[in-house]
Length: 227
Ligand SMILES: *Cc1c(COP(=O)(O)O)cnc(C)c1O
Image (cartoon, rainbow, N blue to C red; front, side):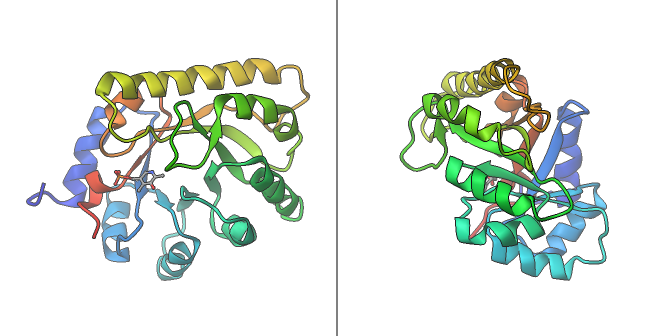
């Protein structure tokens, strides 16, 4: 990969994706020069996992007007307010407590944050997120968070799975989103379209796309290995 440019990597990956798949460039530990290169290749969606790091980069990239920022890391609730001011999307809402806190803050601002709920269809002690039964149980209360646009599910498969197992994780996440859409028809919840699937990273994104991912989050494949 060393001889390739960011531009050629982006072009190559784009070619392999369905036109509607949103490619989010994950830029944690990536400098703003590389981010500008990605921008020149058409990237408008950046994903960051630290509020502080994103804040510094946003200052330095102020001249790029049409960016969308996606928060993809674990969000501590004391950073919720700051995150909502820096990011249009939060992919990693991982508890009812955090959702309700974001909802309260969102009630005081003039736009609607776009959020995904992070789910683990297999147990994974290294990741945060809802188990499937817990998410279904919290659904009625999540449906009341009307200041948030609940756009869908986000998942990261546990490490060490076979390709078939990873594909199964993505397919189960897709099916869970469909089940949630169905269950939500009981509630008056116009702000919960649940139409997005944020899944797929550098090592597994073709499987995620195969299972219906609408947003993939790529770091290493675009920018090379992180330190
Ligand atoms: C770092 C990260 C990515 C990108 O990972 P790569 O393997 O470098 O593509 C995607 N999603 C989340 C949540 C991440 O933390």
